[in-house]
Image (cartoon, rainbow over all chains, first blue to last red; front, side, top):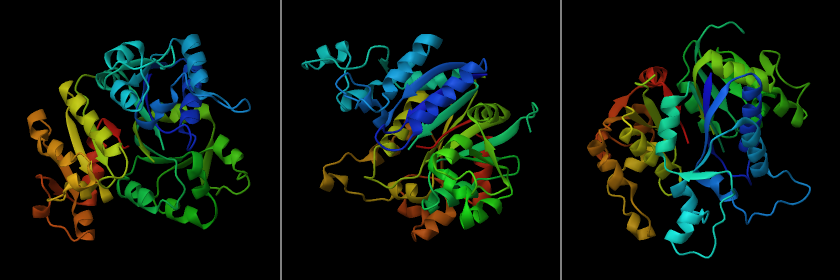
Length: 130
Length: 103
Length: 120
């Protein structure tokens, strides 16, 4: 089975992202594929290098990266959602003439077309939100 | 339950039943062949008198065990609610043609 | 696999959070990818369609302009529950775009016939 995930949550309220991460680990361990994880809405605020996670808390952005590294996940961040929340890659940083790019390496900014493609390319679309 | 049979829509709820509009909107869309999966804060709805509204829907009721344990509800979940682990969560999403998340 | 259709559900009133705009943006993007898109305005979601909203008074963008332009994107399957209109004492003429008024049974069928559902 090929899954895609739409994440529409805030890291600071609720546990949607943790649930999505556990779901992904479980799906991959059962031999399923994850075509794409699409981060949309408030979720994207936390995919920033400027974020400091307290030492006794889990950095969920790091956990996505670890899973992406071991299972070759495609982590896509909605570019419109990111830019309006001040999460920029180098290209957007240059385009808007800002002081620094802060998107966490390993995540890619792209448009909603990537969500449309995920819908067309996957057997299942799961939304995790709050 | 774990056969290859394809069921219809898996309704995934993650809010407590104090979000009553969410539950009533979800209930309006249920048809035979659907199921409800309670995750995160919604597992409270599987306890006490709140479960009555869910039982009335006459669809299979599942709840995510890790969220039940985290909230100290293991002994409080209604006997007609099936407690499942993450692997079964994934299996359910395979068995149902699609899911709809209510949050 | 190619002809999957998508149902988008709007459940929030105007000026609440970004979910309405975000859902609308998904509709436009998916339509551009030739995914057949239907929109369901459920519960408070129907309040977005009320005629005569003056969002400028709040210095906010009015989504109604985009809703009115949906036909240009070949999005013409718009659904509202009759019972939601009654709840707010609205009639079809109070809405700024043409919607199909459906009962709860028809809504359940609409959801069953949809291949993918996004409900932000």
